[in-house]
Image (cartoon, rainbow, N blue to C red; front, top):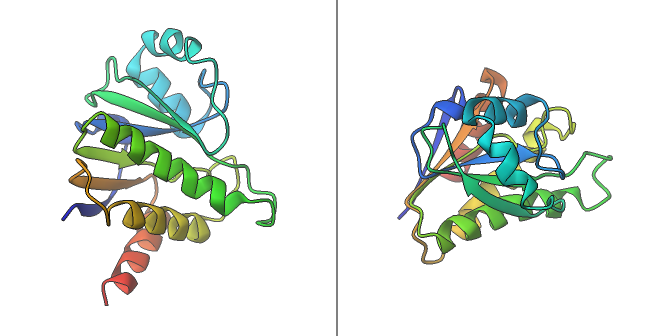
Length: 171
């Protein structure tokens, strides 16, 4: 059975098969986690992302990790929060599911996710964590190469939210 972990820290430092980038639709870099991943992986990443011709919200695409300790980067485009009545939860769940499908298709075993859409995209942290954990848990119910999923929280607030949700599910 695959395991779920929660850590607080810098996703660019993890030596896993793939880290997920909370990307924008251009895939060419931005702020927050996206900018940090682009800086840490080096200029080769922008070139590789240009070849992907962008990505739709709710979808994901794969590149090498270049200078990162992670072998691959899965770029997932989360939704901008617009109040919750515009399909945001479905699009966010799709980001996690598509990322896991890509990882599984490449027989990857260890994947790490940031808190997608909770930065500048404004998705409420507690609701985003619920969607993330539910989508990942649902995916891991079926056979997969994935053995370990880590939720990498940038701050203590997100880490606490994820820990509380997982703890309530395990009761």
